[in-house]
Length: 412
Image 1 (spheres, rainbow, N blue to C red):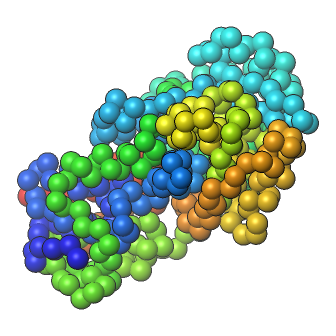
Image 2: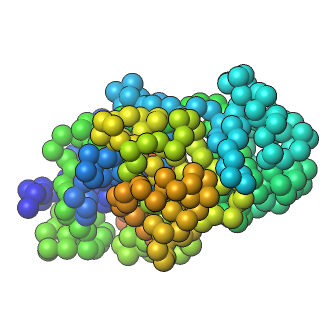
């Protein structure tokens, strides 16, 4: 049982990236802080499990290095981020097609031009979309006119073919929204982030990111400490311990936060992920693999050991199949059946490592969507997390820092 202080300036409930960002800001300003985490490690939804020597992120997660908050709060060099090649490998009718970003990978120009993901006009419009989203301040994209992503794509002239074969498996996977009903504002932000920087995975897994943040809070994070009640300027843990404080920051994911603070209900995005061990990689590409049919249930996949060899033991490979909005049924069989149409009978020999069924992988962000929701709830209670900003790692970290700044100002 961790030794909790009887009183601190601020109690932070939750050691996910939002809570850690808030705590780090307050600690740097010389406030006394205690971070209480119900789980056995930091990170919240950003965790990595080691299974038989393989590194399994809890859900298929990718780090977008262009996120401003990452560069502000994390030492990316120390994380040793291994980058995917820009673009994707689209699987369509038993064949694979490399669809690259010709601006960053000119060698992919011809293969991208020939790939049957859409018309030549579609590909020209993708280049125009890239130019539009990269132009100016990113914050402007969050204040533009808002529509469901699929409506915005159709109005921009994209064909149903390119929507099904490219946008749905890529962005439906990233935003856990196969229907593409998420706000076009968030779509624009993600498209910009993909175009402006690298997509990668840390050498030791996504869980290395929150662990690095927590390492800068020595002795302040208390694991296996569930909070049962937030009352005014005090919190009570599930085993009856009480900590008095000047402010409380509830930094839990939305369903858990709602059990402690009165917050509006918002629908959750769900996600399934299945991990397999293979003795031979089904492709040598360091690309995200997209389901060109757009039907799923596996919308995208990756051979993670091609990108970061540290994700698998020597001589073996790690394959992840991502299944947005699919958490029920035999996910392993569904993933094998679909990937067998891509890579044939070798899939049958793969060893199943683990299946993740994530009931709350994030919140819906339907139009009209506005980030920067209220963080102050009166009587010294504050709330942060990706549900108070954009539903992304950037949003979680920025919300946490913003909340830390707000609390520091209130206590000064």
